[in-house]
Length: 199
Image 1 (cartoon, one colour):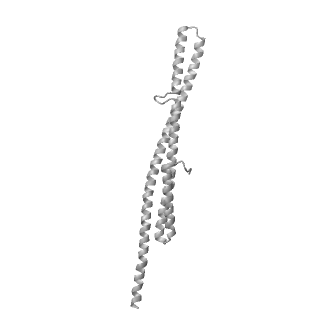
Image 2 (spheres, helix red, strand yellow; image 1 turned 60 degrees about the vertical axis):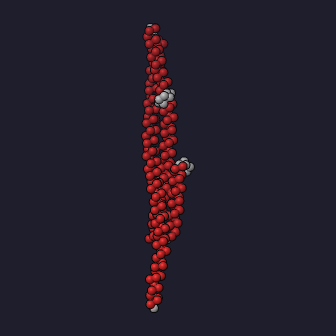
Image 3 (cartoon, one colour; image 1 turned 90 degrees about the vertical axis):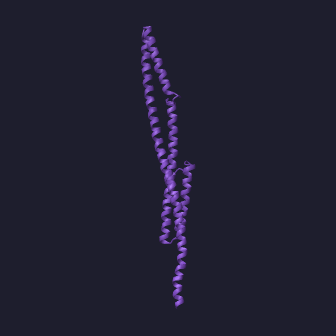
């Protein structure tokens, strides 16, 4: 009877060992997923900030482009009006002055249209705005992938934690799978943000 009494606590201790070992493995898994979560959230924040900055840059360039368009239209209208006056005047001195002013306005309009140095002509502004938009879209794509990655890691941590409480080992496997999925999306965000279109 005495031997049987000692066997009970001993048997309980044997059960405790594997559970403790399993919990350590789960804790390690949670720590690893949490580390990747921190990376994903940092990368996501950085990508979002860059995307918003590029969005402002593109918007400013398009506003500048629009201002140049209005100015070109105004100069062209003024030049056309003065050209009519020049054609009808009989005074050679006036005609010469009108023609000089018309040339000046048309040269300015041409410069507003195409000015490479500094690159502030309409042509250059459009190209710069499109480049900024492409970069913005790339960083927004990165941000969305990092967001999905973060969500996968967060759910993985919750499921792995639930294993400790419920004892359902299947949850750990799902958590590990979500961790792998999170790493996959983080990799896509880093190296090929346009490979998968999420939104």
